[in-house]
Image 1: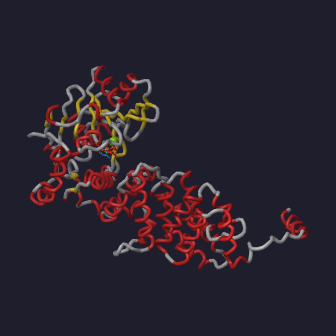
Image 2 (image 1 turned 60 degrees about the horizontal axis):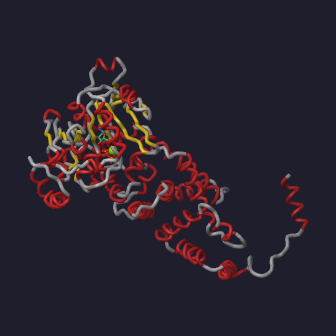
Image 3 (image 1 turned 90 degrees about the vertical axis):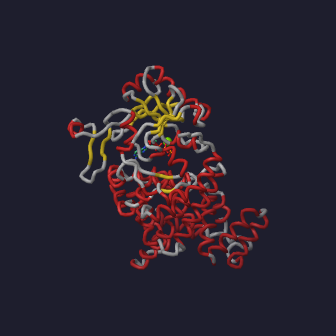
Length: 475
Ligand code: ATP
Ligand code: MG
């Protein structure tokens, strides 16, 4: 088989893919018994050492020079073959974590469930994993592997051969190994064919593999959306039904996954795919009642707006703050909850009910995706500023515009204006004009609010008596 990949071939194959999928490939499963080593020599593929980071090369060579096997694996191989830049470089070796640690001073061993070595080069981290082997009952007793009653892998620290390691990888396109010893690619699950045909296919029995680690369902969607590939029928079939298994995954891991899904430049596509597989609903249960057949409820419109703008920012190299996305996605569940609270407690004013609803909505959300506290603080700030933006009289507008979070709050209001129209849109237009206006015009704009009653004309001095009275009350 020739495997000389280049980008033109891949584009051509994308066109041919649909037809081929219909014919055969799309419905087969990749049984672990079918795994067979296919070596693609350096002349037959387009990965060059120039495509790897210096740090990844350093780690590969140091392992190799010390007599260990060392391969680049996973996204590093897959993405370079597709002509894309890998997000990170993952390395697999037969050296144990302890042996790796001895070789690298800048090494930290991490993870209990899945023990790994991180080689640190400043902020760049190269992940090195020891080949995983098969689980045996014996291992459970020795506490190196463990599985829950539902089949979920609780610990996976059985080491094995590279062949066994390939079986334990998730998708065929992720089970290709670039060998630093001779620059060949070792392809165990015919990943190269699936890559050419644009197919995401699990290795082994899909249901068992999803039960072992339900996050694989999210990964299938992530790769399909990111790489514009199709999840093959048998790999896709069990997802919707098994999606509730995600509830057993620690919320901290799901938070990390949610960022990879929605904050890496393909958020909008990924969102729609996640919804189709009933996965989005597991990550954002508070949004489930707001999802409609037509897909255009205010909450859904807001999700689309924020994901579209997030994708645009990321793809033009700008930074994004996940707090903004979470704030937008949860805004309409928040206002609905606030309304409920106000209906039940007529004594609560609008501000109080929004504050109370913020606590309830965020408490519920962090149970599925553990949004860290520094981000929930920003989410609250953005929400609170929505209540302050309509109050512009006197010095308020001038103070507000200087606030650190003003820009985020304004961008947020702009999206709300698009969804709600009416007064919200008018308010947004006012702020748009105010931001760019010269000082005298800004004063006029504020004076014109409420017919200029409160801010027009010379300010009345507050009577010294009222000041005193307030001071007494405060004490
Ligand atoms: P990217 O880095 O672009 O997100 P990736 O495929 O490199 O994609 P990583 O999370 O970096 O993903 O994992 C590296 C490799 O480890 C994967 O390609 C896959 O072979 C293996 N892997 C990761 N997570 C799992 C999992 N849950 N089950 C089985 N194999 C996995
Ligand atoms: Mg990776």
